[in-house]
Structures are given as C-alpha cells and as structure tokens.
Image 1 (cartoon, helix red, strand yellow):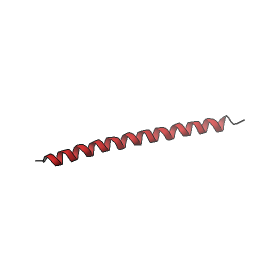
Image 2 (cartoon, rainbow, N blue to C red):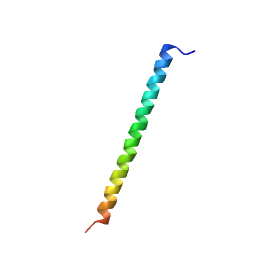
Image 3 (cartoon, one colour):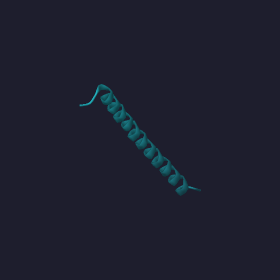
Image 4 (cartoon, helix red, strand yellow):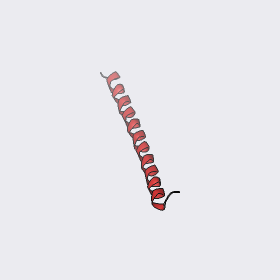
Length: 46
C-alpha cells in the first residue's frame, strides 16, 4: 500500500530517469556528429 507522497516521489523519479536517458541519447548523438565531421575534415585535407 503506497502513500500519496510515495507515489508522487516515484513519478518524479521516473520523469527524471526519462530526462537522463534523453540527455544521454542527445550527448551520444552529438559525439558521433562531431566524430564524422572530424573524419571528413581529415580525409579531405588538401
């Protein structure tokens, strides 16, 4: 039997976890974009 405060805390925890995964996904995506740009720059060096 969960109290109202416990339920609210669990909802907040789930929301925070979703944001953490979102930021992690954007961070990893950004790293790959930077890596591809750097590879392109090195391969097309005059």
